[in-house]
Length: 241
Ligand SMILES: *[C@@H]1O[C@H](CO)[C@@H](O)[C@H](O)[C@H]1NC(C)=O
Ligand SMILES: *[C@@H]1O[C@H](CO)[C@@H](O)[C@H](O)[C@H]1NC(C)=O
Ligand SMILES: *[C@@H]1O[C@H](CO)[C@@H](O)[C@H](O)[C@H]1NC(C)=O
Ligand SMILES: *[C@@H]1O[C@H](CO)[C@@H](O)[C@H](O)[C@H]1NC(C)=O
Image (tube, rainbow, N blue to C red):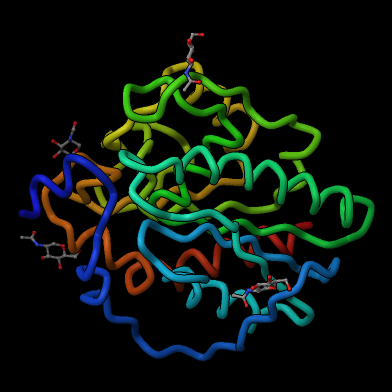
C-alpha cells in the first residue's frame, strides 16, 4: 500500500501521526497580518490541518523574536494528483505575498516563509514558475520579483521538486538527489539566481518525495531533525537585515 500511495501523490494519511516532536522552548504563535517585526507565512503539507508540522519551527522563531506574527497559506492541501490543491495554492501564495508587500513592504517587517511538502512545491513554484510536468500541468509564470524580493528567508522541508546540486540544498548526502516532480532547468536556474541567497532546502536521504527514495518516515521527521538548525539559520539571516 505504501509504494502506490507514494508514487501517486504526496498523501500521507495517518502516517503523519507517526511523526513525534521533541520538546523545546517555544512561544505560542500569533495569527495576525499586522506589519510586525517578523511575519511568518506557513504553507503546510498534504492532509495536515493548519498550521501543520511547521508549527514547532514557527514557535522557535517566535520565541527568538519579539513581535512575531504568522499567517497560514490558505489552500486545500489535498492530493495534488486528483484535486486542484496545487493550483489553488499557487494563486493563494501569489495573493498573500502580494498583500504582505502592499501592507508592509514599506516597513521594517521581515517576511519568513516556512513550507513543507506540497506547501514547499506551491511556494517555490510561485517564485520559480510552476507546472511543466504531466501531473502539475501547464507552465505558469513566476511571481514578479518586486514582490518575491521581500522574502527574507524561505525554509523548505521535503520539496517534491527538489533539484540536485543547488547551493541552498541542506541535508546529509542529499546534495545530489532529485524530487518526484523535478523542475525544468529553466525553473531551477530562475529560482537559484533570484532566490538562492534566501533559501534553505532541507531534504532527508531516501525521502520518497524530495529524494526519490523509499522511506516514508524520512518525509515525516523534518521538525525533529532540522528545526533547531533551520531556526538558527533563519535567525542569522534576520540578524543581518
Ligand atoms: C487566522 O486569522 C484569520 C483572519 O482573522 C482567520 O480567518 C483564520 O481562521 C485564523 N486561522 C487560525 C488557524 O486561527
Ligand atoms: C494548457 O495549455 C493548452 C495549450 O495552450 C490548453 O489547451 C489547455 O487548456 C491548458 N490546460 C490547462 C489546465 O490550463
Ligand atoms: C549522491 O551522493 C552519495 C554520496 O556521495 C552517493 O552515495 C549517491 O549514490 C549519490 N546519489 C545520486 C543519485 O547520485
Ligand atoms: C527511515 O528514515 C528514518 C528517519 O530518518 C530513519 O530513522 C530510519 O532508519 C530509516 N529507515 C531505513 C530503513 O533506512
